[in-house]
Length: 235
Image (cartoon, rainbow, N blue to C red; front, side):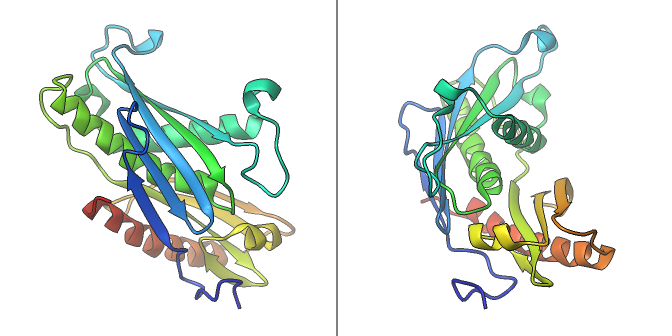
């Protein structure tokens, strides 16, 4: 029995609030259970030096966890320095969100996504990708409204969810207690047409068999398809 009585293939309750940062070009507060992440997008009218004069844009991301997001206070990274974990997750978010759009249709603009974890109860990187994608959509729409882009480029919805194996049972969308006890944990990022963007999967105690991976992938695929319903509504 899961702690919140969810079935093995059940997502935690998901809520999205738009426009929570009025000074951002796009912002979303995403809540997946007790994991809450604030995703804000800043549009810069320039690109990194390696893209100068190549007539394309760029999407990049930074990730951080606020000091009281977990059961014990973590040091603020602006003082302690950015952790390797935060850097790795930021790169994952950036790679995932660059799959949303043909970068040549963004002009020479950089979309910089800041994902700040307010409360952490497992799956923070997946919530960051899911919320960050919605914030990018909002930012690109605002770019068109402001005349920074002539037309709205086609956007491919992207979302992410975790899965794992706990006590031999494949489960979808692990909370912290499940993640801490998992024999296998994984993160899946998928586009709305069913193609995988990135998969991270790790055995915690012993190697696991391919059929367990496929069971997790099937759970994640169905769970992400449910998350794409967020693209049909605006809070």
